[in-house]
Length: 82
Image (cartoon, rainbow, N blue to C red):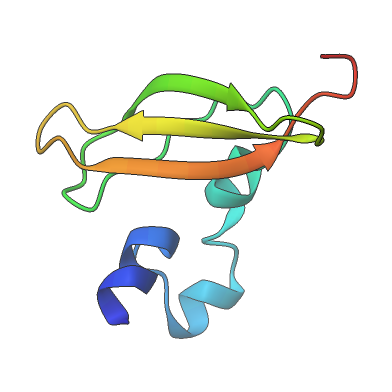
């Protein structure tokens, strides 16, 4: 469970968590966000694909780390005009 939380929240726990460590993660969820997440190995991940969810207002963004090849799939809001 701790590894999962570290991957999602980038290691922000305790008082750091309350001071806004989630801001980058939260921006990833916004429509048309150009933010890139950091991998669990600390490298910046690359956006590999954006897959719209049929019949919904979300999309799945697929990121991959250039250093360790870890893959992250993130469901995010889709722009209503898309």
